[in-house]
Length: 509
Image 1 (cartoon, rainbow, N blue to C red):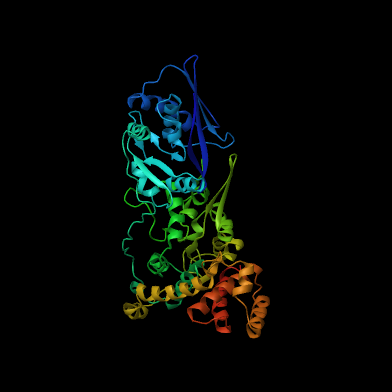
Image 2 (image 1 turned 135 degrees about the horizontal axis):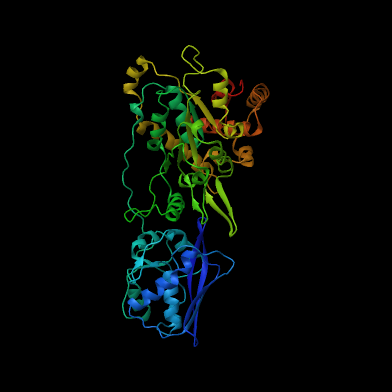
């Protein structure tokens, strides 16, 4: 007898429907599984056979063939166990095939028939809804995560026996309310009021957050670079529901959602150690998983001691910073992870950290140049704002005790974001940093005086085309913060100042 049910495999941040088919015929007893399967999926036959027996389903000795189609898509993971067990039971005639129509099954089985949680439930449920399924049957531990997706019924089951009883009509399961969103917990962050001095750096941080621009801070040890970066989460704008689901899909695939928190509520702040590999940064593996870049999607990726990262690791940032996504090629296809990040980086200007103060710097000229050259020009070109963070004087520390709080700065950031939200409504842009060249032409027009000034700056500072457009995007943010509908000369001047440090450190190597 033949039967089929629906399941899904996750590739990138999307799921692909998989038809799990079973055919049972007379012949020498055997259990064969086909369909371009990984070792994890092939092992399912032993888990499923034992789980069915321990769940009270007696299988007559038959020839069992299970196929997972389409056969040209690599299947990995343990999420097909539940679907395989159900389709075999249906092929034996224990369950009516009509009861299985429009239902997607996903879950791992252990030997006593318990249904265990799996990663990637959010994209699986979202994909099931798009495929026209009306119901998803998932592990009990994953039901609240799946219920975030509206427009589809989600049932959580604890055991295979409970699943069989429901499909036979012997028990009733209560669906989890679809679209159920957890209440956001008030997060506590370190306050900018604790930062003494560094007014220019604080301003640069505010501009960067207001437009979601990349930022590099250069200065000696102890100047407050890391201190400033660690306080950025406290002034970030709240996530929209769409952004929460985008991030939660990535965290679901990575297995980072907990049983108490099924939806990411705050913008991510990822700060990997400089020993991280390129693969861990970008993601990958035999069965690709998202890396730190994608885990920081719609949030901040903070790289402290930037030159200490390996050259290979830093270079993998170039494509994501430009295209806002990470593409990983494998034999099974190309998977894509979102990577709309705000890169915040901090570094010393030389190995000892005191350059260009020649009275304190102990490094030779070649050591300084070799240290700075670890940051390639193409990567620097993709950083919108570079600010120098000098050593703090005692008087600045005393005056900084009554500095602005994160709440005050965040209020201004939110005003700038509301301006951008109104401007980019019904477009693919969210922040000024998202603008492409066509968007810059539409939303960043310059007057005659501004055009003349940018022409002179382009020639004198030897700017690249990419740098020119990034300056315009930063100027657009500064204008929004000032409440100006048009970009003026003063806004361009401030944006250009954020590129002048390049000439001091890198262009005179």
